Length: 73
Image (tube, rainbow, N blue to C red; front, side, top):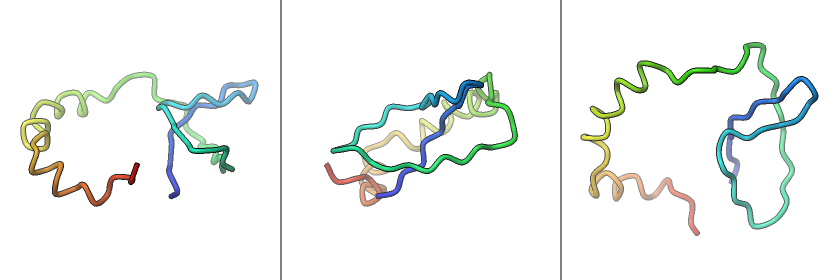
């Protein structure tokens, strides 16, 4: 399965993944370098929306409805 993971590459070329990745074995990866600088702050809109969305989305029936999109362990 192909995954897209956000990362930051520093001026020395070191890659820092912004989320944890667990793989069964080593994998190849492609890196696309974007022109814009990394965001240093969390989006205010995302923070303000979090509680309202959680009330609607954090329910067992939502988990069941979207379960077909989750990776198989």
